[in-house]
Amino acid sequence: MNVLMIGAGMVAQTHVLAVRDNREGARLVGVLGRDPVRTRAFCATASATLGYDVPAHTDRAAALDQKPDMALLITPPDARMDHARALAAAGIPTLMEKPVERSLTAARDIVQTYARAHVPLALCFQHRTRSAARALKRRLDAGDLGALVHVEMRVPWWRDQAYYDAPGRGTFERDGGGVMINQAIHTLDLALWLAGPVARLQAMMRTSPLHAMEAEDIAAALLHFASGATGVLSATTTAYPGRAESITLTTTRAQVHLEGETLGIEWLSGASERSAPDGDVTTGGGADPMAFTHAWHQSVLEDFVTAVARGRPPIACAADALHVHAVIDAMERAARSGHGIEVAQ
Image (tube, rainbow, N blue to C red; front, side, top):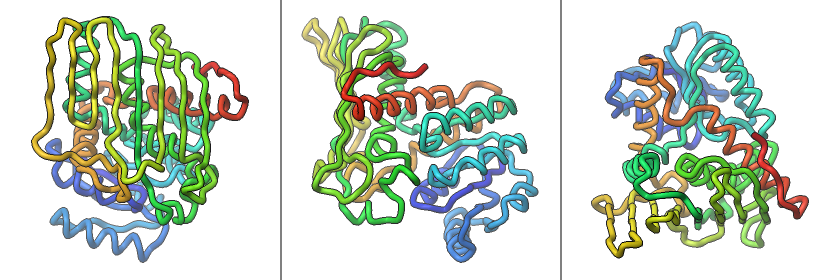
């Protein structure tokens, strides 16, 4: 499957490595960027990594004339809308970096654009592809763990000021917000995938003295899930030096702790289980935001390629991404109002 990448920013090299190692026949046939010099330089590096020539484009029409089979849309959120509309109109299945857009309204616009065109759209919520997360999802769906009672989400990450000094980073105009829509969105998505939708919440979102930025670097929420379970969320980029994010589930049969690729289950019967990877698996929670394996992006790419080929839903569909947006939107509204907020459905 021939892949066009749109965007050549921070995460682009991760996607190049994912393409290099994919086992489903994906091949990078071009990169579309805004800056000709930067795009050519990136393509030279990508060509060396992949072992074949990757053309650089700065004109979208010319790039689409190459008839790619799918697109990787990895621009910042504020540069997303026009590309998405063009790709949907051209019938090109699209795998998009999170978030869909800066606001819930804009995200809905993009998702509806693809839906009306009957073109597949999926998000790079790569935490869903981790083996421990998939194993837990299977056990929850099978009912092995009983009913869900409570969910705890923690994202104790660190970013230094240099990270936020990059133009537009941590602003509402470019990114749509701070720690929730940029970092904690992954853990929130994973928790929603495991525990189901949130119906109502209360929240606080603040900017700490540790960062000079527009949006929040600390967020906390109390959640009421549609299932009746409760939940708490704590997310920050002020927790030096940064630790792995985690999700803890209390069920009627066990206490379950998922941290990175480590899964532990403490059964009420007194038995316990634990599975962990060999060696350390860094998740990008420290000062280097790119300190994580490309294997998770590779899994998302392979899933999307096979989903398109077989006509099945991808592991992280656009509808799920809208609910994550809706929860973050509700958190923002609740933080401003000081009251409990219903999550838009």
